[in-house]
Length: 103
Picture 1: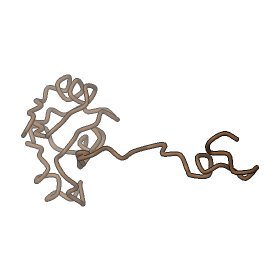
Picture 2 (picture 1 turned 180 degrees about the vertical axis):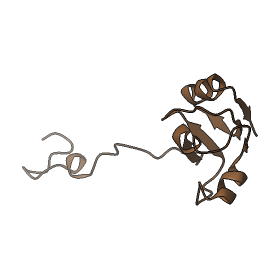
Picture 3 (picture 1 turned 135 degrees about the vertical axis):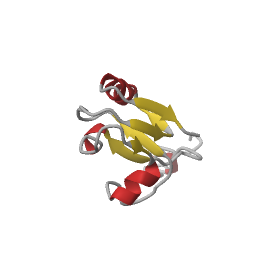
Picture 4 (picture 1 turned 120 degrees about the vertical axis):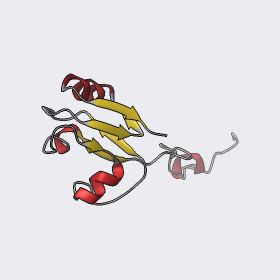
């Protein structure tokens, strides 16, 4: 008989669940906000994680701020965040605002 044969019983290598997904080691957790969440702010406002928490737009601080590009923006804002998606950066700059990457 071959090695691993168990007499008709389901072999051990098939009984053990497959390891489908390993979590990323040291994955960075971001506090995220979409562009549509910034649309209600007044023009020329300096936007940072601290200012969004004080204004009540964000309720929890899960790490550095990351701005995502869902929605439209019509006011010029000065946004300071750890990361921007490409579409978010384009929309902020199209509206006349600035994007500053904070360390």
